[in-house]
Image (cartoon, rainbow over all chains, first blue to last red; front, side, top):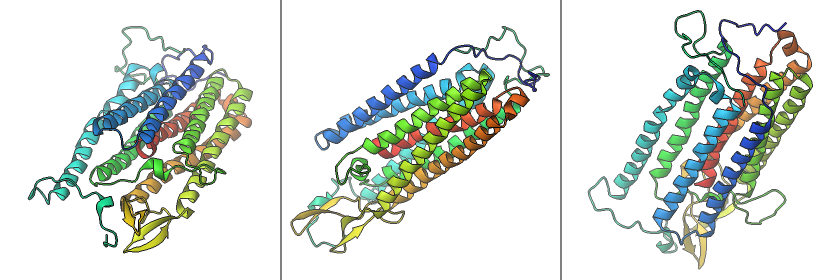
Length: 141
Length: 245
């Protein structure tokens, strides 16, 4: 009895006749993306201290973009969201756009707190932080 | 590749059919996962905010450099890569179980559900080892001019900046928030993995008892699969925020 009971809910059934080739392809894509991420992470570790701030930040942004690509493949293929009708895709994806504001606003806030603390809320200019290694021995933290 | 062939001009919003072309349970699972994404997102963004607000943060390559049975070898990224690949692989076996479900192949679903459950248990085992290692593994840390030995807990950790003390470089107490965020977020994720394993075991038993064959479809496997993939998805971001950057 192939009811697929909820007939008023499902109007069109997706074809699932394809093999498992696509699943394995995405497995390899995810693996390669992860290995590239690890490579970049290891690069930052191995070159620790000799990299400029710009290079470190760019590498971290590159890793974050690779992570978003992995997220896209997992949601679209493994969770089959890419095979659903447009209405369902939009009702899930559109609210997630809030994250754009969420991330920018809060990271900027954290940054602002650090600047306030380092400058006594703007009452003195930003100076080079005293590097802890320069603190004389015996000084109480 | 599966494609939904929907004739152009289908009226989705005039009533009589779901505009989402999916069952109530599946749509609600998606909404639950979306709300869970915001919960995890809020945790990770608050972690980012605190991390941005301090001048020094623990270096992940220094904190997570151990591997089981490798003694004190310095192996940054190694163990967490293993955990990541375990979770990716269990995601693949889950999607294969869903695929067998579409073909109404009970034996296939059973096989891949078992593999998925084993993957989940392996991941939990790795996490238990990592937590134990971090809590019990102590490191020299300079506190009020005295050397103490600290493990990493929610209230204290030895991952602060290094200072000179009696001619040797030693650590100072690290940012207090580090342990709280690390154990809080990986713990919340680990609990999701744990409940996912329980759900998968229930699904395996129901498959074995033939419930889905009686019902005529394996949609429950699909819904459990959505949850399991979401757990993998969250790990991708936890991996990014705690171990890579």
